Amino acid sequence: MLLPKFEYHEPKTLSEAGRILSEMGGDASILAGGTDLLVNMKRGKASPGHVVSLSRIEELKKVGRDQGALTIGACLTVADLREVGHVGADFKGLYEAAGSLGSPLIRNLATVGGNIVTARPAADLPPPLIAYGATIQLVKEDGERTLPLEEFFKGPGQTIIEPGEILCSILLKEAPLYSGGGYEKLGMRKALEISVVNVAAFLALDGPSGAIKEARVVLGAVAPTPMRSPSAESALIGREPDERLFQEAGEKAAGDARPIDDFRGSAEYRSEMVKVLTKKALGRAYEEAKAREWRRWK
Amino acid sequence: MKTLINLKVNSRDYEIAVEPNTTLVDLLRYDLGLTGTKKGCGTGECGSCTVVLNGKPVNSCLILAIQAKDAEILTIEGVKLPQGLDPLQQAFVDKGAIQCGFCTPGMILSASSLLKKSPKPTEQEIREALSGNLCRCTGYQKIVEAVQAVAKDDERE
Image 1 (cartoon, chains in turn red, yellow):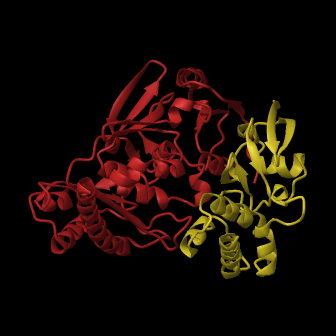
Image 2: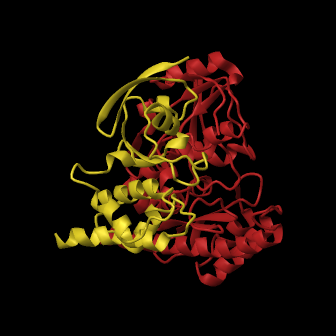
Image 3: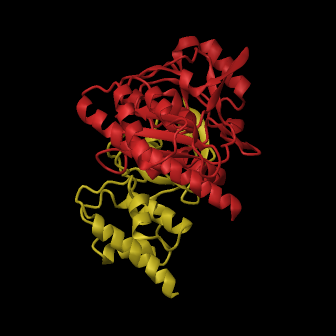
């Protein structure tokens, strides 16, 4: 499989990248990890006249930590994201999702930002990031904006990103005390798999063994974009966490999901699996909340 | 338009002009004649084009040659030691982990990257590390055993 011809640009700074993109207009594609763009170009689904690589912009690969808050550079690879100790300790749902993306070889190339910007409904990282309340920063030659990640997606491959705009970082605020997240993915195999359904959950408790104060349940691959389940979340808030409650939340989540039939699974099967995965993801989030509390005292 | 790049492959320096749309696997195979790196799916699913780029195993079909500017690359040709096969290569031979051989370069590079990071991996860790490399002869069991054999030998030393 051959790549079509294009002109290659390798800016060294974000501002240089912004300038090139605004000069090229719609004829330029941004190259980050390349695991999506180059495949699409080989398959003839994309044939940009200009490819602007972000791989030499060092500031986009950085991870910043301010107390418990994290700023993740959009060009950090998925493998490197897992190496950030803070991610494994405080954002377990994200850590698990990163470990289930593609294969080890893909994870050494694919970037966190790329997994967001491509806006695939079954992508692994957006559900946990939304569950943790992530915001993203978009920059353009003449300005920047910050918005919640959940407002970013419009449909499969469609986002609110404007021509010339670059996703430069993902921000996670400090995970509250007594909180935890979990991620569950269902695929037909364990590696190089696109989710049939995935679910990320986040729970914050009111004290060490308190009721649920904050809950976010995010479903992937069951709607045109990753979606939160308002019914599941409102069923959880104010209640004591236990398995029966998580089961109930799973049923509510299945009611909110809007899956389609495709070769990976029927809509009916996906709805059933939303129940199971939501319950499991909530169970993991609760376990993680307890484990984090325990680690804090150790 | 061709661009001149410098890169190091198997400890040897190269200066070569590349087109933007040349992938790293094609540069290695067609320009440098290093055909040990195989070309399979071209979309990052099979792992036959695995090379180690700046210390990390990656799919060379998903990297532009021009992106490898100033990089250090290890291909299967660079694994062999002056005195003979690398112990991991020898283990693949001894354990019958090579059938048709097409996935072998990628398997060895993924496995050696794992062993460098974690010299005594569990079976699960080995299987995970090799999960981006497909073997269509389905000799996975023997491949895992070959990696385990090297990890064990290390223990004895």
